Amino acid sequence: GMKSSLVSREVIADSVELTMRGHCYDALVGLAGCDKSLPGMMMAMVRLNVPSIFIYGGSILPGSYRGRQITVQDVFEAVGQHSVGTISDAELLEIEQVACPSAGSCGAQFTANTMATVAEAIGLALPYSCGAPAPYEMRDRFNFASGEKVV
Image (cartoon, rainbow, N blue to C red; front, side):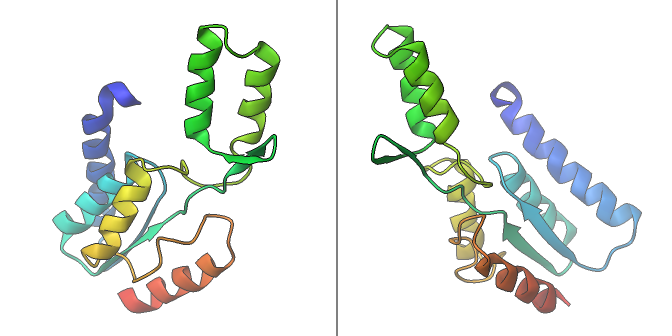
């Protein structure tokens, strides 16, 4: 959660590192998909100093509400509007139900998408691999290529 953001990144990195060292693995293909797990996974890769490739789980597709695309950011805004009486319970419920129509990380400029871009930029992920949304089948090609590249 947000109250233990930095600590949870450290715990994720520690857990990955402990698993890798405990099982004497020679390489790592690290899959992560949300705000805390991406930096945690990448921290572990750098600490371990073994061949490693990062795979981003992908971003969620936008939903559709009354003819326009919406994301989780719109849900946050709707909660605020609801709290001041600008929209009804039914409208808020409808927005909540359609905003996240697929698998994937939050579809906005949050840590997950930003860190996925960083992973590509610093060479931990294959070029162009982090841009494909979670439900796209093209992700399978990047996943397979990542496994080949790490060995």
